[in-house]
Image (cartoon, rainbow, N blue to C red; front, side):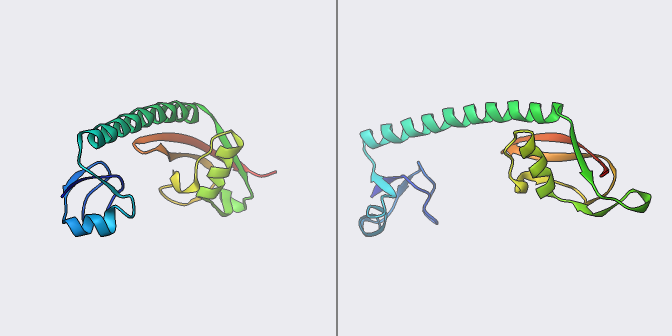
Length: 148
């Protein structure tokens, strides 16, 4: 039986794929879980429309992410931290600290999307990569200053 998958199904295919499966597998597993539709002209049109909407939504989101990335790159970020002798920090600047700093400026970026190459343990200027959207990254300029 030929079907159009409505969801990703492990070892069968991805959402929108046209696959050939055994009749029993389709009736007993895929149809009850609403993971597939029988291949017809109407179902093919439905899936094509869904793909077109998803592609349009993805391009809109990517455009917004690129605007956000430009704003992040043009902004100046200053973090004040407690430090001791020779400008060494007590502890280090973490991705959570950078994420909180971004949130203060109005950017909702998850701490998992902040990529610090090596731990920041001293005062100074650093360049940090931030993944705003898949395939859209921004370089954040962070200056770590002594806390008064």
